Each structure stands twice: as C-alpha cells, then as structure tokens.
Image (cartoon, rainbow, N blue to C red; front, side, top):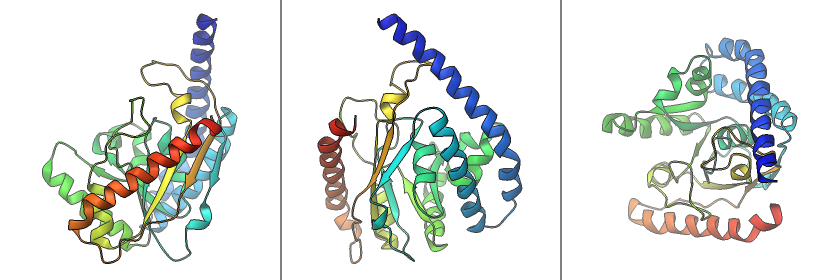
Amino acid sequence: MKWFRNILGRVYAVYGIIIFVVTMLIMIFPIWLISFLPDPKKTAVFLNLARFWMGFYLPMVFCPVKRKGLHHFKKGQNYVVVVNHNSLLDVPVTSPGVPGPNKTLAKKEFAKIPLFGILYKIGSVLVDRNDEKSRKDSLEHMKAVLDMGMHMLLFPEGTRNRTEYPLKSFYNGAFILAIETQKPIMVGIVFNTRKILTPGKFFYAIPHAIQFHFLPPIETTGLTLEDLPALKEKIFVMMWDYYDQHAAQLA
C-alpha cells in the first residue's frame, strides 16, 4: 500500500498549502499594518497574531502542538533560546511557541519573497551568510534584540538536520551571543516535525501531533569565551539525551 500512502501524502500536502495560503492572505493585512510600529511592540503584536494564526492553522491541518516546560520561563527574564531543527515546519511552531516577544535568525533572501517576506522582516534578524560583515553585524543586531527585552531564538545546527541522528553538530553563534550578553540559555526540543515533512520527499506530508518541550535554563553568568566549547558540548549532550529518551514515546 506504499503507492496509496504516497498519493495521500501528496493530497494532504496540497490541502496544507491551500489552507496556509488562504489563512496567510487573511492575516497579511493586519501584519503589514503592524510592520510600521517600532520594536519591541511590533514584534510582540506580530507574535500575538502569529499565535492566533498558528493556533487555528496547525489544528486545521491535524498537527496540533502541545508545549511542556513553560514554567521554566521566569517573568522579567529573557533568554537565548536554542532549538533543534528538523523541518521547515519548525519556525511556525517555535516562534509562536516561545512565550513572549522573540526574534529568530533568518537568511536575508527570505525577506525578498512577496508577501511572505513581511513575516521575516518583522520576526527575524536577517543575515547574508555569504557576507562576513553581515554575519558580524547580525551578532550586534541580536544583542540589540536581547537589550530590548525580547528572546533570541536560534537553531544551533544552522540548517535542517537531514541525518538519521537526533542532532547535527552545533555552530558557535548562539553560545557566543549568550556568553557575551550573559543571558541564560533556554533549551527547547521539537518532536515529530520531521515525520510531517519527511526529508528527501518532494511535495509530500503526513499529519502528526507535535510536541515542543523546554528544559531548565543554563546560566552563563561569569562564563567567558574560553568556556564556549564546554557550554556547547553540555547543551548538545542535554538535547541529544532528552530527544533520545522521549522521541519513541512521543512518536
């Protein structure tokens, strides 16, 4: 029955895209209006709209999100939030799923996409990964986001994990940012988005419930860049172990 599953997966993908486009066209005007506000209010209002949007869209495509560990976020404290990255679906799950205003890091090219680019201009720090100056400037922009009291949401694997393992190796950026700003790191782990959008399969999706878990934050007070390798390794092992222990039961 593999052929039947392939047909269903493509029919579902069409359904998911249609619902996304229709709901985006409804949401795009209010999002465009709030794009004229200053930050951090602009991002806060945008994310409230995004939470309403995704709170409708994801259940409509049979991919409800359940969050766990929200109590780890302390009132008045913002974080560098690091999350695993398995799918294109991770961004609409994680940005609205992190409580409070937050921005993520995104490729500058995304901002050029008609309509869709507005979302990235508001909700992201944009970077040209092929430009060294842009990469350096992005660090300062992320520090400014934290200075405004927002969270900075980052995928330390850099790109989507298409391997058979829970995680790919981490880049340094998220940990440099946390150390230099002395902000605690909030660890988030997303489950099952890879099951919805299977790597290597074009125009194919299968609905599945999603879990988004937060672990106790890691303090960086007093750490220096000399501590970066140990900090990165500590969080990598923490995320790997948690994913390994829970993935099967949440499948």
